[in-house]
Image (cartoon, rainbow, N blue to C red; front, side, top):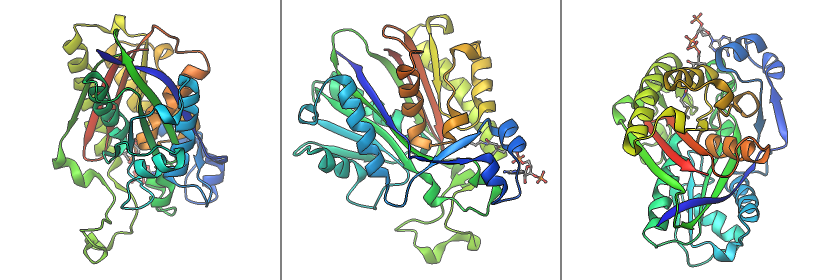
Amino acid sequence: MYSRIAGTGSYLPEKVLTNRELEQMVDTSDEWIRTRTGIERRHIAAADETTSTMATEAARRALAAAGVTAADVDLVVVGTTTPDLVFPNVATMVSAALGIRDRPAIGLEAACSGFVYGLSIADKFVRLGDARCALVIGAETLTRIVDWTDRNTCVLFADGAGAVVLTPSPEPGIETTVIGADGQYRDLLYYPFGVSYGLDRLRGGEPAAIQMKGNEVFKVAVRTLAALVDETLAKTGLTTADVDWLVPHQANIRIIEAAARKLGMPMERVVVTVQDHGNTSAAAIPLALDTAIRDGRIRRGQRLLLETFGGGFTWGSALIRY
Ligand code: ACO
């Protein structure tokens, strides 16, 4: 038994913030942001929107696309770094909003890798017969944890949500997933405030906002993603020629291009949404996936390679026959 993607959905807040508008806020330029990151605009959650409200909307759209209802769902997994509250977890909030009761609801924290981690876990539930309809969501409200005076980070991060519905299938489906982590890199990318850490232990008086040594993250990301795609293909005996679409994490166009180059994938076979979405962390891959499915690029029967890298560091990949 395998799991397959029965449907996808996504949600982006209405408000769009352009690079030109950022020029009015910090010492930056549209040209710098576009050439260094590929980002042109990003979506920002409204005051009454949270990670769970965006996740719920993306989930509704994925359920509709899959032709199932909330009553069919027997597992909800939400990857996010920006939960509404410490607890209850966002997956329970999504379940409540959709009217799903008495089913497991897993909130999962793995920074940008949250969605792929969730996919890997839900895949196992479905394959083992413990779930027959799993909702896997990546959702973030990163703009709430950004220092809007720090040009190093505020031009990068954004909000949104994406979701997939997994159902059992005798044919793959998800062919394999690989997930990994290395905690020794915690100081290269982190958010300095946490519950057990406590505000009084904020290191060096840094603001409660995302801290990132972008340059160093960049180097480890490129190296790790290259090894990750090799490992993923080796696990299945497939080659790049068997992959129709690379659906990478959308952090930076230069990281995406480096990964594609390493794989020997022409950019025409790479889904790129970073120009419109910015870096939405755990939401980035399901947002890109849903965008490319709805605009007709990704079609049934094609093989997809998802790959991600984020804070922790964490990373993950999935080979999928869509
Ligand atoms: N506008 C203008 N100049 C800027 C800006 C800006 N918005 N931001 C930084 N600069 C300046 C820096 O101050 C620096 O100036 P200096 O040389 O005078 O000190 C110069 O630009 C170069 O800075 P670098 O950090 O070396 O620039 P780089 O080319 O590395 O690009 C970036 C920075 C875009 C952050 C890149 O390193 C990157 O994308 N890193 C990886 C991010 C990532 O993948 N994160 C992982 C996922 S996120 C997650 O897990 C939540």
